[in-house]
Length: 342
Ligand code: FES
Ligand SMILES: [Fe+2]
Image 1 (spheres, rainbow, N blue to C red):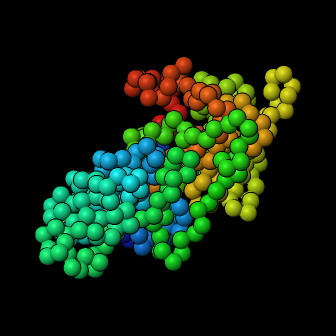
Image 2 (image 1 turned 60 degrees about the vertical axis):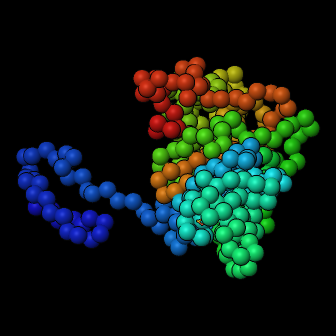
């Protein structure tokens, strides 16, 4: 008999019937699954949720904000995104501060979004501009504010800050995006098709730590599934890890078949920024992209990427047996797995 405890501390008893002549290690002895809520919970009031709320996060493309309200989920909060008739982007809590109707059914007007139920009109900072059922359009409308978040459009990607207003940090900028080589353009990667983007069904930390796992590139992206990038990435690298001022980086050094030395670095900046050198080995010098592991909620994550590339050059995609990931059949996903499947 073994006695363990489940995550709530309740004793779990098992009679494994173990004796010297019985082979063990079967699934029956598997301890109950556990998660680490300190890292994976992202709601307000949780340790990681509060930590992440001290940073700006991308959540959609600028082109996602239009005259039809769109649902957004970020850090476990349900929000509504729109762009008013003056071009201002609004990111408001989904539930109307009057009676809780979702603003998804609202109407976008010149000055803001109007709730479908009693017609309260809110601007992009949540101010109530009109209460049409009240005398004089609402004598006390300045007492009612729809919860809102600030939005910044950075190279066509929308970012917001969801933390305490008094701790809002300056908007971060990156030299590879703000000071690109002549002739380069900055765009969201086309893996980021905005709110339609595919999300990953795991917590943000699980996908984020993949950036510091350089050995899987040699196996998953080359030896196992065929070269998904370029042949040079298929050589087994010498790997070392280094702490930096803002996080951790790994160096991957390869000697190529033609004798050339290939040095590559990937880096994470705390808490959720990822700097991954192009796996297509088409540029030297600084990395040409900045990406974020964005927690949608505690079990769903989205990677959002801003990329610097020569204007007009098509975006490069990982190929699985010559096909793009979204074009694979279920059988091909099984035979040519990539990061998502792993
Ligand atoms: S519920 Fe939105 S105006 Fe009444
Ligand atoms: Fe990968």
